[in-house]
Length: 144
Image 1 (spheres, rainbow, N blue to C red):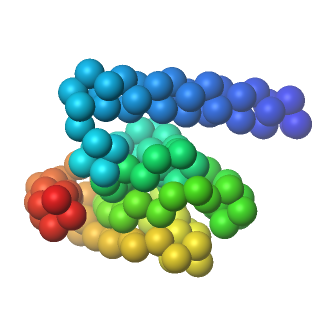
Image 2 (image 1 turned 45 degrees about the horizontal axis):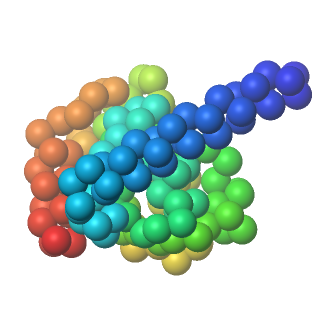
């Protein structure tokens, strides 16, 4: 029903605001510029990272999203403010967030002209495998 969707969107927006405040605090407390700060999210953390990063006023270094999905990909193109590079990693045996969500998110990001990298973690369920961690480290090193 409409009210549950509205509740979910309100919770998402509140969580997104909290994450934005957290990132601003990291910058203020460490002096690190936003372009050297990365969001690394697993599952729901991936969903939050993919929601916030394109809509943040300041461009961050990049996003690593593992075993998550993009909420409302159809809204991305009209809401995007920034286009940080994004690495998406998903296990092809994930029984919590379907593997097909990798291509749905990648397609939406590419349509909005993001720099997107993907990795299928073969034989991996809803978890972070070593190949995903290696890819994330290489992604960060290449950007920095």
